[in-house]
Amino acid sequence: MKVAILGGDGYLGWATAMHLSLAGHDVTVCDNFLRRRLNAQFGSQPLFPVPDLAERAHVWRQRTKRCIAVTVGDLTDWDFTRSFIEECAPDAIIHYAELPSAPFSMANQRSSALTLHNNLGVTHNVIHAVHEVCPDAHIVKLGTMGEYGTPNIDIEEGWIEVQHKGRHERFLYPRQGGSLYHTTKIMDTDMLWFYVRAWKLRVTDLMQGPVYGMITAESSTEPALMPHFSYDAVFGTVINRFIVQAVAGIPLTVFGRGTQRRGFLNLEDTLQCVRLVMETPPPPGELRICNQFVEVFSVLDLAERVAQAAGERGLTVKIDHLDNPRMEAETHYYNPTHTTLRELGLQPHCLSTEVLTQMIDIVWSQRSHIDTSHILPTIRW
Image (cartoon, rainbow, N blue to C red; front, side, top):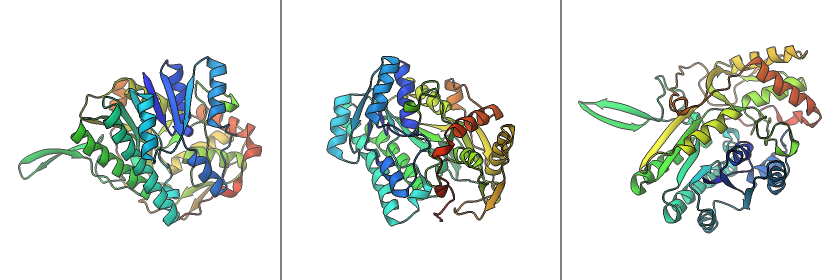
């Protein structure tokens, strides 16, 4: 298949590009390097030095004899987006080109405005480009389990059946994001659902939980192919951040009581999920929603697991409970459904001590790159 990956320079985007390229797909990646500029703005850098996208593609071609085409441009620009999609003529579009940080979206007016402009603007442009130049293309958009919030009922897979006063209807599951970032993802879903109905688009919306990990089968430990691994308080996900804190000798920062529960998955499982849905597209006029996670943990569960794994490597790790900087329920019901991806063939990688110690070993080898000044949270809402 001809595949366009939007946001192809990022943590998930580059790993997906390599995975699909090695699987035989014709891959083009597009990015405007906004994430790199924001990292510089906040003074935070990824754990591994990340070569520019063209250099990564060059190393990939030398290593595999396969080509990942690179286009640099701003997908909030309509003329660029239309010409890029027209030139690629993709069968599938993997849409990662959104700012992926709840804290960033809540930092101040400028960061919230940028989050709105970027996330909704890119999605809107992609929808119109598909409609105008490749209406049969399958849009695979990365959503977030955070769209649902923590309701006091089971979380269904995107849709809910409602009986009301003797009548019945199927609706998008009610959603209540905990940040502006999550709210833009909700608005993405609503916008896609409108255009699916209006223009008979084919769309898969992946409600993904927080991702952890740094090694995939495609990158192995080749430095130039490693992902954009963030561990700071703005862009780092919780398990990745805890691993770096353990190696750096910083107590693991558990927000509040640590009883907040979420669904998590390994980076390798993200790649599986994206490939599975891409290779089995829904029919025109369908918005397919998949809850994309493997296991549910509380934040305190994760901290204790990381501390135990660090102990296996001779590291003594403390756990600190900080005043929660986020507006979120700490004690809540959480029972999300996740069956579609398993039915499509997902073979999960579970969070084991072996997985955590492997991550600790890799971070230990890069410990001289750790900047401890950006790990503690400074953004509150």
